[in-house]
Amino acid sequence: MSRTHEPRSCRNSPHSFENPNGLSDLLEIFLLLVIPFSMPRTFGRMVGSLRQGYAIVAAMGVTAGTPRTEKPLFTGLLVGTLLIVTGLTFFPALALGPLAEGLSS
Image (cartoon, rainbow, N blue to C red; front, side):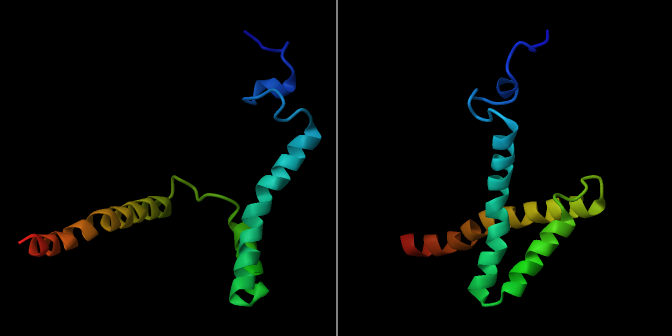
């Protein structure tokens, strides 16, 4: 069943006043991109070299999003990330176990 009787803004928005027209769509896209592109510039100012921040922005533009998920590189990065997060979650508890036993006796 088609919902063509509803206005365009109600079809994909949780609220009917979220994006009433195309201009507000463009404003929303611009504002969503302001923070990610301002962070590398902030990094450049923190380290005292804006060129480093601009280099990060250039790398962001070249990579243009996420890596391809069917490549082995993605699988390696995913498995590596999971191993690191798991290790950081459980190994501190294993290392503190004997210390806690020594304190309790």
